[in-house]
Image (spheres, helix red, strand yellow):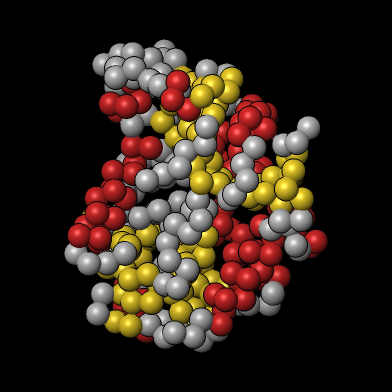
Length: 305
């Protein structure tokens, strides 16, 4: 069971979570015409009156861009301001996950994006590990990742996640933790809600943006860190068979953070993951405000004012 935070941002203000409700006729509920973000926040280990947000600027920019794909207007400044009010109302004392959501809020039956009202909300849950930090098992999904010509994959459009839902349930019901989706060209794309990396001969490799992936913020952070740490990187197409012969495979995302893959179908992967471990340790230090070189990636919000 999720432990929801007591207040949500709804209708332009903070209200008790139980009061943040929508009509059964809400347009986005029926047509998937919404876009969401996901942010992690945690109390500063050195100062409990301060909340640390990882790359809040990039998250706000992506959500604003996702809104534009829905022909809606949501300014980055509006997102930042709402998050501040939300955190000060809830005063979290443990790590949390924030879900900001822009959606078509009209009560209508016509599938459209023109001449329609939109709204914006935020709720949050307490969250530790989304996936086991010790590693997960994966299967290759029978479901195919959508193409950008059929859905705007540069945004986190809510309707697109039916494929992720089908793939995740298929994986779990067949005895695995997670699914890996191929794209329409048979190349590795991503997991159900995470980007994917492999390591071969010391080179960090990840499917490029031309492989129908979501341009993940954690993914971007890992690539930037790897280059700064003199780890060779490649963004290119990845074949399915490469997953079985890789030295390391791991997933990345806001919820999943950095999660190792220990098995893919019948293939058990090496237990040693030196590249992933270096990157995960560095990323953890940054998100906890312990790395001065990447202080610009951390937004600090006081909640005890």
